[in-house]
Amino acid sequence: MDNKSRENATMFIGGMSMLVAIFLLFGSGNADVLLIPLGFALVAISIIWGSAIVEAMVTPKYYPSPQANREDTTAYKLAMLMELMDTDEREIFKNRLADSLINDDDSVSIESLIAEKRKRG
Image (cartoon, rainbow, N blue to C red; front, top):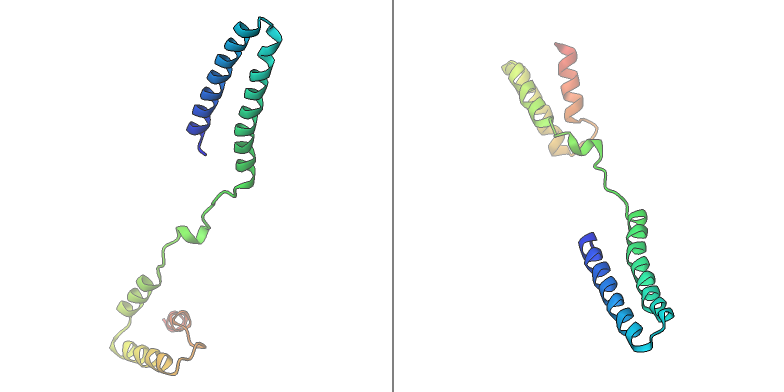
């Protein structure tokens, strides 16, 4: 239930309890009967808004992880690396990468190949 629905329910309960209180007052002539519908209204409104407070305390808030804000720059870095290589280095890199993919060897990652290229110059 959202806050607008709670406001509407509060207005409806308050209005109906006042109408019932007025009819009871005119029917009985005793002012003590006003406490019955107004007490029920107070309890009902407390339950409606109390559930909102409990819901706000229990519902976890979503905070995106810092990694979600970062975009993946691996493809950009790899393209830049390929651009910086000369033809022989590019062929060696492609052959090692193809061998790695064919052998499904996870010990040689793209990051390690990039690091090796950075060390060489």
